Image (tube, rainbow, N blue to C red; front, top):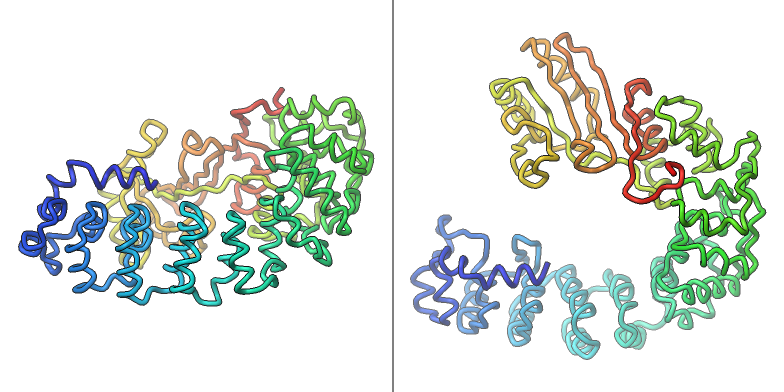
Length: 498
């Protein structure tokens, strides 16, 4: 992002487009003052003049701007703070001037330190931090960021002590992302609090196998057991089978004592943990896993694969797949609300289909205009969809003339809002539809809620992933299973389609 920003701000188009830009480039303060009128709305552009002053190293104009205008809470159109912009262009003298001139919030100071830790060196951090400290509320976040630079971390420890190293989130990031720092918390009392999280799932995806072995050995030395159940009835070995970056990880964990013969608490075998894995990973484990093993229902991994392949959806198949993945009984699944199910999938590293565009299609431009007016009057945010059409091109199927963008997500659609649309459809004797983006856009699926002229509602969906999404859509969006078109497609070699 930074490189694109720099290239654009130095482009000739900016000099031709903004009348005062050349004055800044030429370091001509008098000409700039003559051309720039802060109060004149016509002078508002994509850039603030201070951005160009920083880019072109125009110290006189920079000093003029910070003397006459308040940039304490300034962010540009890319949400970059003044301090970040100065750092991007390496204008250290401007940085000190700004820090001395304004009292920046802790958030802006923290973002400055984030940039320094990422792109500068520890000496720069020390010099700035010694003069412009950030509030105590951001100490933890500084420690988290400083895990990326050991010298900066050691500096913070020298000031704040070692206690922050044992903060729950700091330990999580240190162990899962920075195995080279494990010695700093070697005397930690327990790591049991992480058993019920995605902690181990992150560890088994580390880039280097040696690091995975190192961290796992660290866990074993601090009380972990690769064969102990967490509160979801899964062992670390089950988690590794679901998430490890390659089969070598499983062989290494087996050598460290991991047992591949322990089923889940509900009796699902080791092989069943491979349900959503790719073909290559599965085949690489053929020497140590029995793919013909049956669970308590007498079903093998292949049986579950066949369920996922069937285009003729059956509720019992959908529930069976979700039970395997969650290791939960059916009655427990139905007790989960949408957020709980979504978070459970997220923690399991499974991306559930979640529409990110909500639109209303109408039969004509006239109806679209009337609907926009009525919804706006009710305080409901609506807008144009042209930007989406430009972004997704031919994959975007909605008509820009007859479709409105709705300022709420699909899961935020309330019964009251649907009642408003029903009344609109009946009054205007028209059919309208609430639609997500097309499956060609997200490669996962789409949802449509049709509101007929008589106010009746029909819900339809297309799912291109797996039966977990079918469960999610039918359970939490109220789409009848017979109205779901199931056609799984994948970019990589998924085993159950092989």
